[in-house]
Image 1 (cartoon, rainbow, N blue to C red):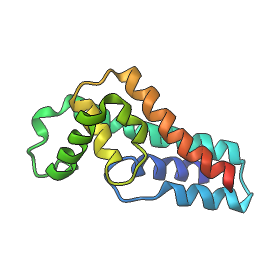
Image 2 (image 1 turned 45 degrees about the vertical axis):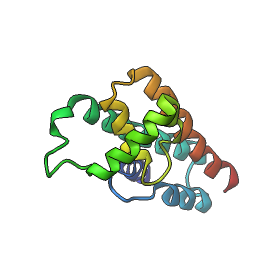
Image 3 (image 1 turned 90 degrees about the horizontal axis):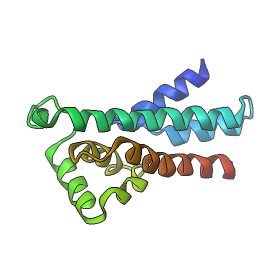
Image 4 (image 1 turned 90 degrees about the vertical axis):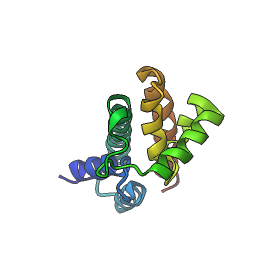
Length: 137
């Protein structure tokens, strides 16, 4: 059950919700009650999958951005778009960065970044961040 909870928190943390999957992962690793490598894998998979959700939202919903219920606000999309314009697809290596990272994955979908390129770059950044937590705890 704890692995499912970690997966859910990691997935939701990759969306616009202000959650911290890093704290949960670090706490679970520190307790030594669970398989640390499996925790790393579950958190990474959930967080990357959350970013894939954002990419798909951007890719398939260009017409929905102006709707009030759309989860990303205009300012978030604008700042992420500027970052994306400046650094291109390589900016996806920083999709783990709080505040700008989640809208950045949405911008990648809006700008039609190829899915495989998106997946590789986002995975490198997000798994590296979790690996550092895993390594130093």
